[in-house]
Amino acid sequence: MSTGQMSLRLLVEKWLAPTPAIPAHVTRFSRTGTNQWRYVRVEALHPTGLLAFFFFRHDDGSWCVFPPCTERPTMRV
Image (tube, one colour):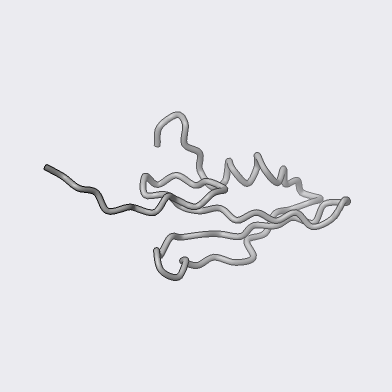
């Protein structure tokens, strides 16, 4: 994993800031329909309300809060 990539654990800590009093839970994980991208839904119940994020696995092994780009057909010479 290169410097710009983060593990799923680090992203959850960054976006949800779980603590022993406010733990984060994986509530859903699967693959998307057509592209078969892996995704995980993680949520934490903060005093201000429920906070939930979807994290998507990219082809390089990194996790992001946005899905990977779809591959488009290319012409080669």
